[in-house]
Image (cartoon, rainbow, N blue to C red; front, side):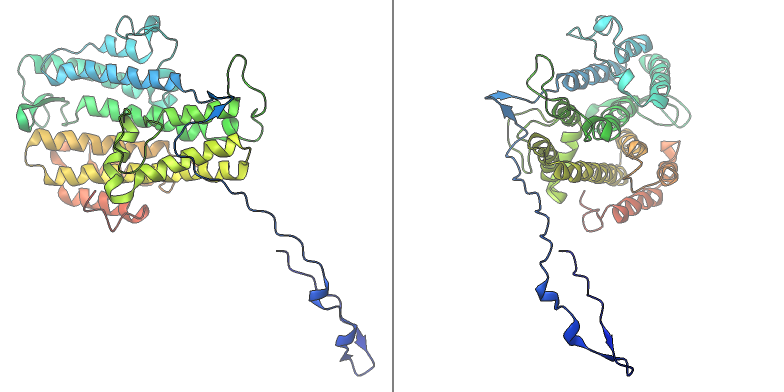
Length: 383
């Protein structure tokens, strides 16, 4: 409510005595009505319809999730002691021929490379080249050691292919692209004013479609999460839980991340459908915030596992995941991020460039920094 403005008080007589009788009482003024607060019920699932038909569409995102799964399978050959083809990985990354040069089941124009953070496209292609070279050594039985790329043994008779610094290629690529492509697209593309701001069409349906441009952009953001539409905390449904949603599920027991992330997505989309743009903006900002907490919780999880690991291959495996998830902070939206780029680089430096030499004390520094920054102090040991 706006505060009433007091009327000027008349000054009467040479004695400068104040006459309150000349003042208009505040209660006599008509107050300005309080602006109605927008309200919105949280939908049960990410399921929106118009004329009894769905308005939700994110097929392109599902395609890219599938492409990354195929790339992981190619890298997995090296983990089993077979040779990896750098060219095959590059063909899949840029989707040569519309089918990854024969390595994708479906033919499509969608690709991962042109949706990956521009400055990091070369970073991943360099990893493909390095993995191919290391896989030759691995196929010849070379066992990894500090300074030597090759095969590292994990518990349960598993093996992984690592570089000379103990970094596992499969994890650096898969988790790396989860950050540089999926997360980057969500927070730096689809949740921006250029995609869901007031200037984006939310009145007319796209030609031949049952959604507006703004609705579709929000759906595309959701598609990169890898969550089924009915995803929630304590999820027991049958939908595929992939990539970011899978790690949200890992953190759910401690911080109820599934509900936090899904409710923000559902309410943002409902706000768009009902043209309640204040809610849309609030929930889009919340998605940015919750995603950073998810990344922090996941990095802490793998740092804890690295501290507890007793087998070299197991430790290198989870350190690679910890590194890739910590690196994902590089893509946090510059307007909402809690860690500066310098702070992210410092955390990466504490993990180190040679994972054979990463110390427990350095991992404790990373855990404590992320826990204090993202309000995870009370659960950091359990993540």
